[in-house]
Image (cartoon, rainbow, N blue to C red; front, side):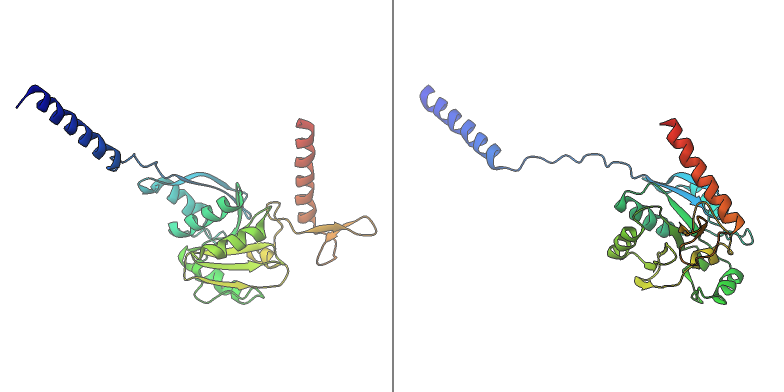
Length: 243
């Protein structure tokens, strides 16, 4: 074979390799997965306690955080706690993220059978086998976009979503997918034993006589409500002074 023939074969081989490199799929290199870290910020409407931080990482639930959350979300009527289901925390974190909320106020979380039975005797009408009994449910309030949060939660179909429009809170649980809406004012206060909470304020208005009254009841605010309102106003004034 001549040198010219050898050179021609070499050129054809190079061209064949080049053609294959054009049409062959580029090699795919697996990139390291970003670690999954879910964070949440909560306020307990009854005690004023707060939780803020990660409850899950790439390996799963964070044991220390889950223990802290089990205490934070205890039945405040008696102090009893249970293991909180990670599913309801995942659900809540997803809802908060969907509406750009940075925190939620918890009105009720774990309930003992005694607490559940007590609520069942009120106008609240709790279920006999409520998901609250198993640490799988949260009743929450958002200071903004609460209705949007409820709609996003229902669209996710990750569990039960209860909507209490007149009492300004919603229920989330990681049980079977189902939705319900319940009217009735003051139901949130039943969850707090009728106590006022500056973290879950009743809507108010100013009467014709210049007195603060409940928007729905029309009655003058109770002393604890007035104190909560005073705290909120004072915080607002302090914020204005800082800016």
